[in-house]
Length: 186
Image 1 (spheres, rainbow, N blue to C red):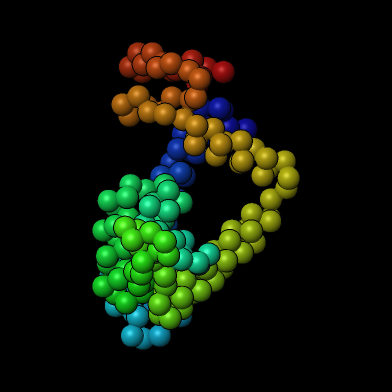
Image 2 (image 1 turned 60 degrees about the vertical axis):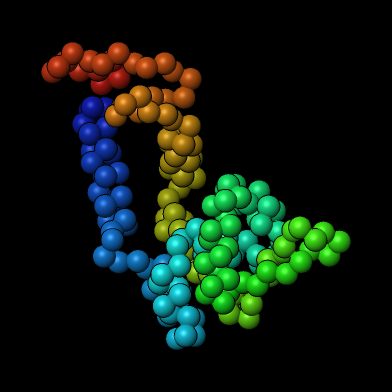
């Protein structure tokens, strides 16, 4: 049986390897999926549109919304959203029109091409969700519970320089060179 220290080292190595495997600049499976499932006239747009722009477009699936409303819904700054909306308008995916009863504000509505891309984007995410579900279904409830706890802990973790600091703890003292840390000793 491996020691706790050996398991931690192996997990750290595996986390890095998994990140490298699925985060390559050479292959963009999501854009490939979108391009393959959209009309050919949209392929260039799909490949060039920033990811945030695609996700902002997806937010329009529920119907027209103002830039301010879109920024709030997406958790982004209004200026950032405005820049991306302009790219969506330029690409012919979104139109702007006056908000009834408000001469200052404009509402955003997807065009026919925008709606098509929204549908394909949603199907892609449904396919990704199904793949994750199929992958994780091989594990027991106990194994999934441990994984869920670890991922929640990672999300709550902060950094102190290059070190991870679990939520609720201050900065741990750095171990002496060559000496095992307190956690490695347990």
